[in-house]
Image (tube, rainbow, N blue to C red; front, side, top):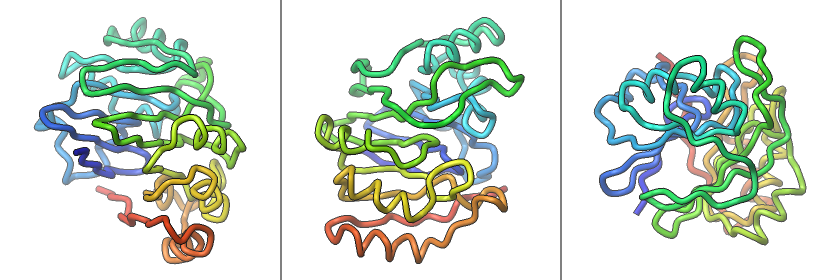
Length: 223
């Protein structure tokens, strides 16, 4: 059993038994979420832009846990902040006490807040208690999603729908179809004026394109 919590923007927490995992933990915009009370064992980053790096360093230091990220991002965070890291590349399973993860392609830029090159942007697929969850990161629609369906068969997809920096609602609905998932959680929308999105329209597009897929709607939290 996996409990999925949408925190804010592209930040999610996944709980399984006595462990929790964070992805893209920009969490301080949600006053209802207290990471200090959560049994977080690992932090993942799809890329290093500030709205995804978020509070990763603060949480990693406080809980003495590693950040798993693409090689260049991970090593920068270790050298600059002294945090524990698991530097990775795309395309191979990484084992954890709670399951496994694999970093996969995303089509997006990637740099640290100070402009330092941060390697490639990624999506991340988690396999927790036989539940496969695909966090698309920041990306446009890409045919890689058809390959992800064929190789990994995710059941749940967390998809950006805000457009401007990522795919929009129309493309995200097609992504859900290509991925073959049963559940979609929209993310990366509503945080800034340029990424506003119509959730009702997105839900309609999902229904038209894939009648076997359900959308889980949760408004992005703001402090």
